[in-house]
Length: 372
Ligand code: NAD
Ligand code: TYD
Image (cartoon, rainbow, N blue to C red; front, side, top):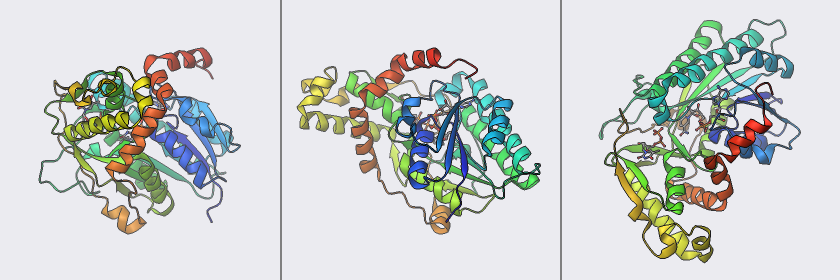
């Protein structure tokens, strides 16, 4: 059995981070979990409500750009494991405001690595073992044509958006700390995640929210772009395997074996919402602006809009290494994962209304001052 660890989860109030904290607290209840999160627009304490009372859990409102905060926390809590999710994560935002991506994703990652080096490698009271796990993306590999093989860990980096470039830079930094200082690191590069608690700026939750509130469903370009969809809990299991069984210094691709064209996802989503509303009268009352509430097709909301600048056409992950070395296998296919996500979104209207209408943001600014 693994001895209890003290795990600092950066970005743990975001979509994947919060799902990971819940997953980890259930699977490793003896481990202490410290979430370090700046609560940007994408961070939300409501995502962590179910773990907030656990004895082995602490939330720290802090920024990975603040070296002193990281340093203090590493020392005070004797952190021996870092799982690094904190990032600016939305490609569209990176096209409009790349600077925040360089700050958090590159400088912030280096700040964490510097602190880890100080406490784990250069210190006389370093813990017996340590691990820095870095969560990255398939977008570092660039884009694929229709017949190209899926990305492997050997695919050359060719990031195309400022987001992807900033994540690529952070991956290289993590690798270099292993090679240069002997830091124990692992990296996972995963495909597009979806599931509960995803901020409704990303394709799937945005389309669900717009569909049930009667707003247009904006499909970029002709909708032929392909993504490889990974249910968030499968991603968490993949990270668990990499952290516990992965070779130190290695990178593993984590995917869902679920390549879908955007337009097919949106069409599928429209059909599922039509079916859900037809099967449950209460939904028509709950979402009166949804076309399905008045017997119309949700698909009538689909609007093809101007394409994203530099829009990567296809991503696909080859997860053979994780499968053969670690026994990784996604449990959800897209149909089952999507149904879980849709049901969660329909049952959690208050959550998405709060994050979208700004009331949650107002609550944060009222309850958290800068030096909390
Ligand atoms: P998210 O945007 O939902 O959450 C990011 C979290 O990081 C938020 O809680 C935010 O408050 C926090 N944060 C941002 N800047 C910070 C800073 N300077 N200091 C401290 N905290 C900060 O992101 P996500 O979708 O959960 O993604 C998590 C990680 O997974 C990211 O590193 C992302 O690159 C990677 N990833 C995501 C996907 C995906 O489909 N969502 C796919 C591949 C990889
Ligand atoms: P997104 O969820 O932003 O993830 P990423 O850019 O990291 O892949 O987008 C997924 C795909 O959906 C991508 O091809 C862009 C497309 N898309 C739309 O067509 N309309 C939208 O409103 C959004 C947010 C995305």
